[in-house]
Length: 283
Image 1 (tube, rainbow, N blue to C red):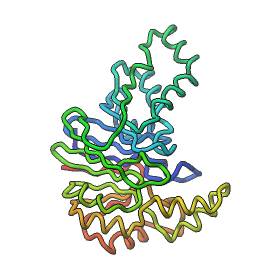
Image 2 (cartoon, rainbow, N blue to C red):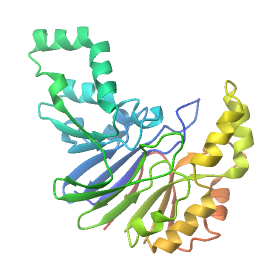
Image 3 (cartoon, rainbow, N blue to C red):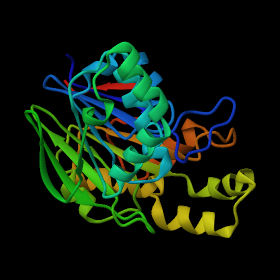
């Protein structure tokens, strides 16, 4: 298995429209481990398109409980179950994820009970080993996962991750710029950081159509302008920088050139502007 990161969903926010990218999900393959970080809409198809059998996941990590990061977790596990999953999968996420899982099982109880009775399937409920994601260190097989709390108000249980084995990958999660991110990501082979083009916020808010000015307030206090992402990456001395959870990503007035221009005000290293399905080798 090649050590790599695949950006399966790179759109910021939950809405999709014709021609847009899919919400957030990231696949980390390192030292024989297959780790899924976040499970936004489209993640099941994204895994298959990346050549990963749904039964081969070693762990799933959910960074916070905004729908674009865990909406498809239940359908993913259910589909893996129908595809032959018979071993428990560690699922690590914020407090409250267990409630989602129980709600999903309840909503699908007729189908689940029927397939257990009619097809001899194992108990689906037992296949998700849900534990609480907390600041500190977690073990994912041979990998170490370090966790810090990021800044994504009004959510407090929102986290950045660093996965370390023979390589090191830092994933910012959804966050405003925070000073500690540079130290957290120090020397990583790859930093995957969310990014926003501040100039695109007016058009995005107008396009949503069913919110008010609170959406703008949320975006501006909870996400990271691209130039500040570049500054963090430069201070951290990471080898490569990838932008994901792009806000906006579907406005034709803002192209890859705008992302590069903003980010490279501060960043001078290799830059990947995330697109769905992009695989970045770590070796």
